[in-house]
Length: 418
Image 1 (cartoon, rainbow, N blue to C red):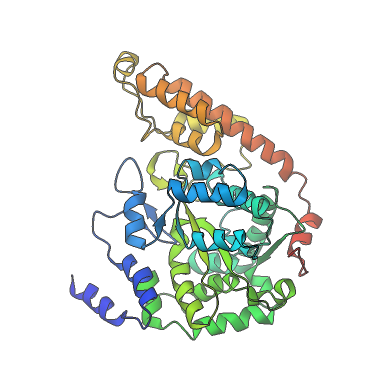
Image 2: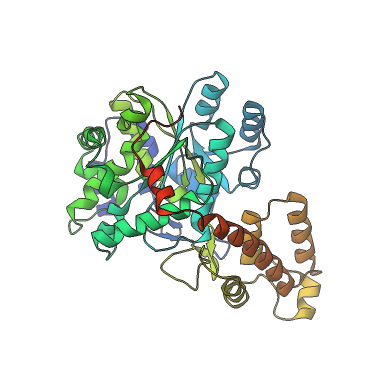
């Protein structure tokens, strides 16, 4: 261990054994480890992030066939293809949530989005698509937080522009198809001033986490603005039902957070705070990242239009992006491809199909055909173009119906179905 690593280790010795297990693991990063944190994602291999290794590093649990079977038994529904294919691959205390539901007890869902672009891309849809399914299967309330304050702190974005991006992204999210009677959406820059309970819980959380701890968890440095130091308490607060007295009437209700694995550091902190505040620890279910067009080492990013397929892209733009930029697992020549076959572990078109093509048998046929050399890269790209274009165009029809009035109805501070 380096001297700097030793100092961090020493100052990060924690009162809670749970915090030690759930947070220290994130500090044990070697040079050959993938980079995964709330602001940076980069794989060291052309196949992308090693998620099994990430589970060990973060100290979460793998979603195995036994847990998927329990999911189906408890809900009476076939598992979502994101579960069947390991796209949602890791969890914290999901067994607890399933046991509660089986016993007839209530919980709620909480997820969010940090708005940094006028339009979201298809990678942003993965947690929301799955959250919609969870909301329908369990028939539970959903809280969606838009962290426009976070983006104003981390990016060169004015506060006013961050607020507007939050409203635009809210419309994108609403178009996924969430139940308006059971969904509350808010943006931090407006809501915190409207709800005293939110700030009060933020303060309770802030009193439980030291500066050294937050530096150890998130890697903040001495030159970071003070807003970054306090922001984790803002993302943590919605995981406690008492933050929303107008919904839960100050009842203590457990929470399940569907999110991408890069958001896990926030909730490792939250889980320790929960124990100290005598609140239920939020359970989590983690997704993988939809890779960038150029390769699986990076997730799709709103900051690079050539690496992403946006929800407002035309059919022509989608076709051009996939044909031009989607990294191929095919061979250099047709003859060589027929002989050796393609590599679905690195082929981006195939990876996109694993997310957006729901038919398991069809996907298995595509994999077999491509890996045998029967299907060429151009044919695989054509299938990806057709599948994603169909999804985006259906989405755009729904998005066109989300007016300002519809959006405001989701933001209204009100009692939702519970």
